[in-house]
Image (cartoon, rainbow, N blue to C red; front, side, top):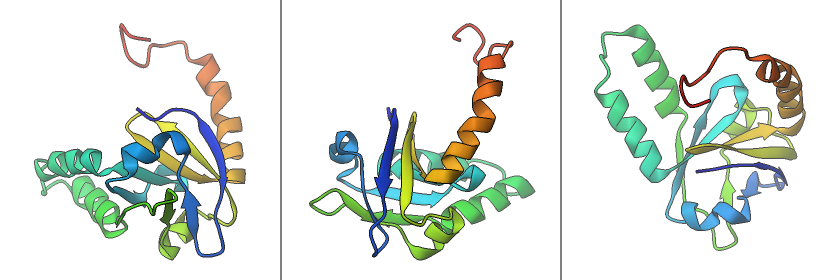
Length: 143
């Protein structure tokens, strides 16, 4: 499980240090791909394989399944962190998420997300109010 908010910086070569607390879990490999709201998703390899298996059973006759799969897999990059815990974020993915220098890596349960710092602040500002005002259970019987 990935938790927390971690401000980080991209270096001039598009490399990012993974949060130290998650380096062991991601040391065997990971997949970076486009996420919703113009962030990047970072999946441990096993979690990405689980998603791949689930999409393999989805009906290819459904346009939304085809479209989602195309973008998810076409933009995916498998990476292995170096000995320092850095990963290289491909230029196309950096452009998609508008990553320049200051980034935020957030824990999002089974994945990490990489955000451009100003984009994350803007998103959080908009969404925190609706989060605090939720009057219905998101997960009935749990929260």
